[in-house]
Amino acid sequence: MSDSRLPDYLLRYYRWAYVAPAALRFWDHEGLVDLILFHQYRRLRDLARTALRQGPAGDLLQIACVYGSLSACLVDDLAPTARLHVVDVVPEQLRHLAAKLPAHASVLHRGDSAHLALADASFARILIFFLLHEQPAPVRLATLREALRILCHGGRLVIVDFHRPAPWHPLRPLQWLIFRLFEPFASELWTAELIPLLQQLHPDLRIEQELICAGLYQRLIIDKP
Image (spheres, rainbow, N blue to C red):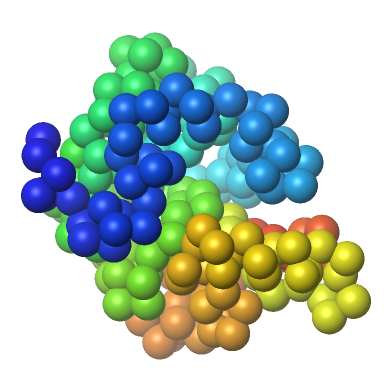
């Protein structure tokens, strides 16, 4: 798949993290991912798993590949007849993930999170794990719209991502600097809450928000009536 079919923002700002062949070899180490998240990766991963296990049964869709053990853990949590579906826009990310997952329990799709070629109401459980902060606002909105479109009635969407930390948080200045240097859209999650955006897209959603590490991160559990 040629670079010309990848989103412009991904090529411009995140080639070094997700597109360049050396990126996957360098970044996909649990300890490194945990360090980047100030040693909260396993906690955040397990909070996502818990929320999904408490949701409806059936297949699970993960929107975007994730470095570390998340996807393998999600497969471990599945019922024997269920499968983990993962969609990502970077073909090499999917090839890399395929080597980490059992073929009988996983289905990989090449696609853009903002324009998913998946049927309406086709999944009862969907996970978006640290993707939204990497997207420009219009793409973020489109990703959420698509996730709610393919989520069935009675289904559950789980989002784990950054959040604005408390003013006194000792890591706040460092996180802000990291955003300024490497994550050009991430600071928008400090100024624009996701909950009003979700309610704008679907007013009847039931949303539970949990703040982690004094507000540095958030877990949203969204149930669609």
